[in-house]
Amino acid sequence: MNNIFEVSVILPTRNEAQNIAPIITQISNVLNENNLSGEIIVVDDDSSDGTAAIAENVSKGCPVRVFVRKGVRGLATAVMKGFELAEGRVCVVMDADFSHPLERIPNMVFPILEDKCDMTVGSRYVSGGGCHDWPLIRRIVSRGSGLLAKGVTRLSDPTSGFMAIRRELVADADLDPVGWKIVLETAVKVRPRLIEVPIVFTDREQGESKLDTKVQVDYLRHLFKLYLHTYRGFARFTQFCIVGLSGVAVDTLALMAMVEIVKFDPRMAVVVAFLFAVSWNYGLNRVWTFKEFESKRYSYVSFVLISAVGLGIRVGIMHLLLEYAGMKAGRLYIIASFVGILFASVFNFIAARYISFSDQSKKTGSIEVPSKS
Ligand code: GDD
Ligand code: MN
Image 1 (cartoon, rainbow, N blue to C red):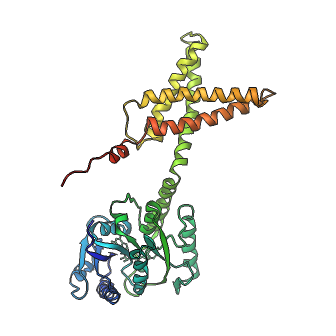
Image 2: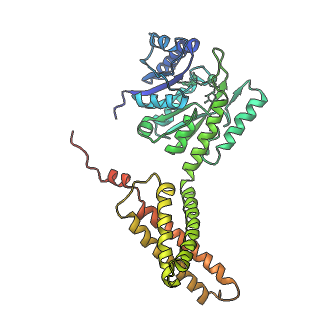
Image 3: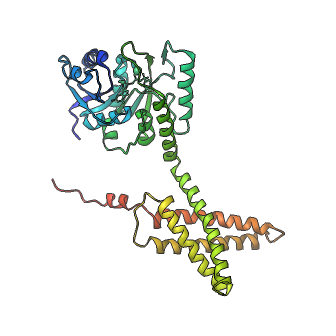
């Protein structure tokens, strides 16, 4: 990856006609004063007030590129476009309305250039940070929104919009934000070494905020996705267990049908019922639990075998508990059966996850032969 500059400052804009020229000039000055080589990338979502044209005509200072998106909107994806276009070692993301203190850019960038961390986040909620002139209600909403994210990040200010990151970490990261929160998305998905830099947030003087109810609803949807992402393993195991429970019902129905309609001997019927239930489980896991995994050639056969081994584990553990742990007494056999089911489920899940449904795309990725060029 070629880094032509030390810093790429990414400015997402929508109707910032009054702010864009002075902010470009002042960012240039700050970079200059600190001997940082840099570029500014404006990603404008088709502003109706001429923001893009004004940005293109700012002549003094560091190189400016303006990218206009038509028909799409959204702060976070605009910033991702900026990551794609950037050619600096470090990407800085900030609002274009002077809300984030420009003079903190060096504090955001140098820790990364000096390899003390990979990402910095401007935080209002570490000592030295704050919000200038914010009414109580806004502080409460802001704090509350931050609290909701505590399960996915340790950032003290998860809704901050001011960050810097080593560009190689976002160049091909798998980012999929909803709405505005690119900082949170990056912190959760990339898991970089992080330092929080105290900042004082000042409300804009020119133009108006675009933060509306939709942005807040998007934030909740985004959070939901991030929680699923963070607890994916656990969520998947829960899905697997739900499928397994439904399989017990299928097993029972098939057993009854075999005995009462087909007139099979019950001992023969359980084998057939087992195959029915396992096939049912396989199908549901294919389309639900492991839906993002590609189909493998022997995945069905391996799933049946794994389930059979699982059954063996269940009976084996039950046997041990009954014989050697004194669980023959009274109704303790039910507990023994549950312990058996638990162990078998964990085994089945891990084996299904890594054998029957294992992710092929990743495997081919790792054995890829580098092309000669
Ligand atoms: N490209 C693009 N597309 N830019 C956008 C869009 C969009 O759809 N919406 C807003 N922007 C730009 C604005 O032009 C501005 O530069 C920046 O994103 C922030 O937008 P504001 O409308 O000024 O947001 P805010 O001041 O209410 O919210 C800021 O502070 C919050 C903390 O209270 C943002 O930094 C939020 O991320 C932050 O949570
Ligand atoms: Mn603002």
